[in-house]
Image (tube, rainbow, N blue to C red; front, side, top):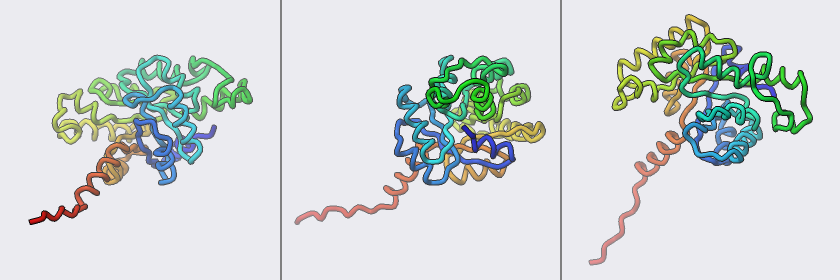
Length: 259
């Protein structure tokens, strides 16, 4: 049940992952074999049945990836992701301290939260693990990440990020830019960049881990240089860019017209 990503974050190390929103165990394996630290299975925007979600988590386990699930807005989504073996959850649209407290309550077993207990799930080895040792180990190893992606959340950053049990604050730059009224320029807009810079500075001041999203390797390095410990690249962007590069670089032979 050890969570290598959570341990690395605690040690001040930086980790790289990939967001995936399509059901494809082979792609998860490719991410793992490429050397990424974690995979974020996107159940907020992606299309996954409960069985497919578990399949993706199981595949991540098999190839050395830490499986994180970005959960949906269904109240049971945190419970279900963790019961299927996710080692962490990313929770979108957390705007207040109260909402952050609720996230911790849903993700932790008593006495730290109110997550429902079942020993017949994958993490408990279908009944092989149980009782206080299992509950304590789960509480210790589950990674709880909250999304800071609105103006309200940015204003409440300190109150949210310092809630006991929150392991990392993740800047959702796209949603943040839209919430600020800059959907055209997006995260590159100067006003959005100013807010993001302020969040990085506040995280440094509070000594709390921070993460963000990146479209490619160069953007990931830029985020690491700013102080992000946890960066997730968007797999769709990486694949689309690679395909575009192949098409742009290729010069198909034109058919010879007969006279």
